[in-house]
Image (cartoon, rainbow, N blue to C red; front, side):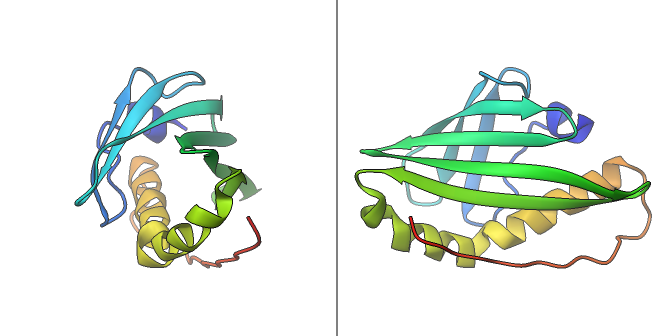
Length: 139
């Protein structure tokens, strides 16, 4: 999506101080995210298919977190935006509770802000009806 490819201010979530993308919004590009009160965390765009999907991967100590954004067209002028978060690796139990807190604290708000930004970029004056769902599963 053009809005993702052109965006430089990625701090959609209130818990995030700043996000920096080093390079274009494409597979292989890297970035940093700084949450309030924490050191910056590096990440990589591991799979970007313009207008369809973007997968961001963060390497954690003994684990990996992936954030998949999937854009699912449902009509000519409506798209569902899904985010799936997965944790994998030896230390999943160490991060599971922290990740659930982060989802509750700001990920949903962040996805709402991302959707609003896409709507503005598409020239929509009025935001379409949204439905937000949260699912959590085992590590």
